[in-house]
Image (cartoon, rainbow, N blue to C red; front, side, top):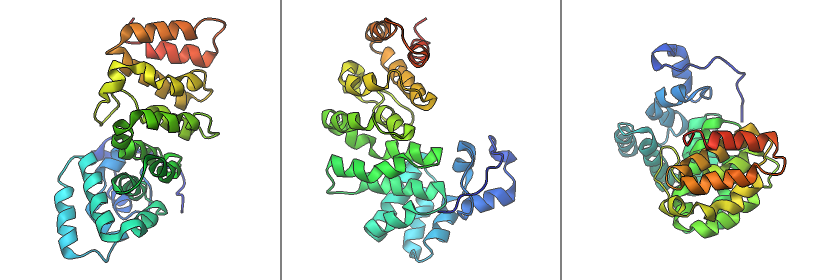
Length: 258
């Protein structure tokens, strides 16, 4: 996989130069910001990566590109999975474009006949991707499966909390946030956040700010429905000489309760 050198990212679509936008839409460079990822032309990108797609398939892609970003990613990925199967996933996983690797995430989420353990094993390399966008697509793509079999998911993800990769550790908490971003809520965790303690406890003093922010946001989600539980849990964590990481997590977790 080729990696482009760092460059200034753009936070407004109108500021993205046409040559940068064209390179993004042809998969030549990865997006540097969320704005760039949202602005690129996925239809053009698909034609570049899969030039053998039929006209009928491309018409379906054009329709999908009129949808919001999440449904767009899901729609294109479902079409690719139908057209190319597992080989399409392999092609996308190795591409230099973060959006194309994002399609691999949703293709992995859409595959049928996989048990949860196998699906998580397939998504883990994408959860550990170098690009921030791919890592977000990874948890979004499999979250419905995690919510559907929550207790089994928690059992498997608990092992991820001891990974040497901060990206994998973060996935363990981010993927099952009670509310989350751009995703459906997990009602069971809104009602019973204590179910996630096997994941939260190993991460409550994680040295990575990337992980700390996810745990804090998890608890901030939970505090919207179970504020007493979150306050009491943070109170327990802050006893007996807490680490700086734990103090930071709790401060951010309680930010809307103070």
